[in-house]
Image (cartoon, rainbow, N blue to C red; front, side):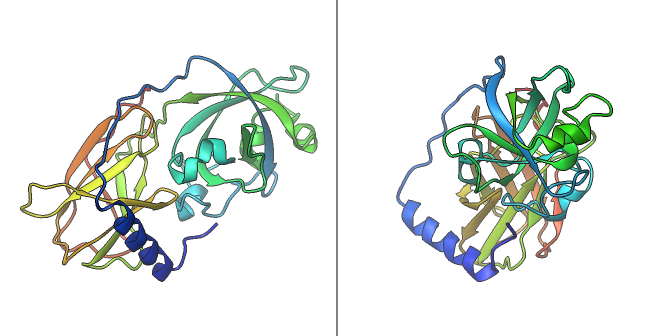
Length: 265
């Protein structure tokens, strides 16, 4: 799935803002359970040694083709995709047949949704490279030939060495409609809510989740620099990046903060 046309994105943002303008934002403190392995199934897509999706339903675009996401991407069914709020979460996946499967788990990052996967049972649709790494040395091809295999999985902390959280300003953003994509979030990886604060202001303005890992706000004129506050979906942890989007921001640019969450759950 590619980024929707700018007019559709803006329309979605307006509708969401109207629907939720009178509601309060409630943040719950939760904990991520990662102690137990759970059953699932896995398939693969794309080329045998490829990265899987080109972009994907989370909106990460060409990031999926380069490190640190390269060869670690995966599509998931609605159970884990969570209408896009599961984007960026990390999981360890391991297959079970010891005659062909490695005992090492593969870490995958949710970058896409698998619309054809089961809606009732957890399903990972991995890149060909990630799927092949589930096998012992020399057995990647035979494992891929099996198509669908039983696996176990558990949540794990996302880790991006020497990377801080970054905010990509989506194409079409203006002083009256601002859309941001979050990149390289360590720890839980997912986002439950997102706010911005304008230059010289004290009030945090709530952004609306549009699709994938994309959030937006309608207002204006919006005045930068913008501080951005994100709250994780799974445990309600909060991080604020002060003046991370500069006054002279431009669409399609990415602005990197000086901080990140701890790479733990």
